[in-house]
Length: 335
Image (tube, one colour):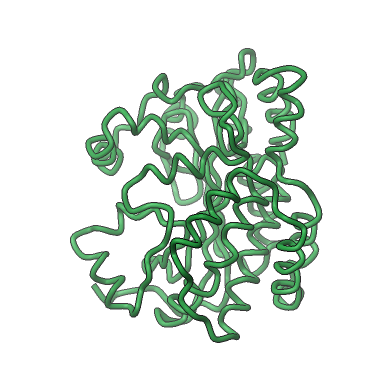
């Protein structure tokens, strides 16, 4: 199991997950096979039939990734509109109930459903996944440990899922709690060496790994999976810039293993609360120099200087309920 695609130098690729919705009710619609009749490299299927996943090409910078994300959102919007549908981007849908949404009939999803049973329907949540290219497995493991202390603040910055199944989730990122219900999810384990990871991969185990960050040998990347899906496409690119800069910075310094219990506590807190100002200041100090060098500082700074989108959802919902939230999300989804 030693084959891998490492050899990259801090390139980035970004995956988004988008809801297909009825333009009138704004509820989720299981129409992905109509909108994506032939899944390809850039536009593909996800767990539920109401979702479309997009994947950018390999990009050198966050600005390049932003251009790709905008093009892909335009493509999905055009496809949806041709089918009489609309598109909504968020970490969760404020109206949709998971048990009412059918799954995509594919082997990997059938396997997941067999493992989770009815609880699989609690996974109707969407993430923003950022892949950062690395030169070697050793570099991937070094960066894996080096970015870990900063993942909770990325979670709180990205929080965009305050509603689950039509009700307030009791957290800014309800998605974070739902992901923690998956096997091999959430807190990334300590990996002493590449052989530890290879052992987990053996027998196809990697397909069942949903850690907040993980090496992805097939792409030669470190994949940061902590962030909620963003409604504002510029925030998606800004979070990619932060991920890229965190990986770059981690490669330049020694790292020590992080206490996993402390990480789990901080992760849980980050899902409930906006990022503390002092933590944002520390993150900015860590990422500014590498982000400037990689050309992503302007986009990263936008994210650091604005509240998580979940707070806007809650403010809109306080006046108009989840339906008003869905309408606002739809309006702000186009790039």
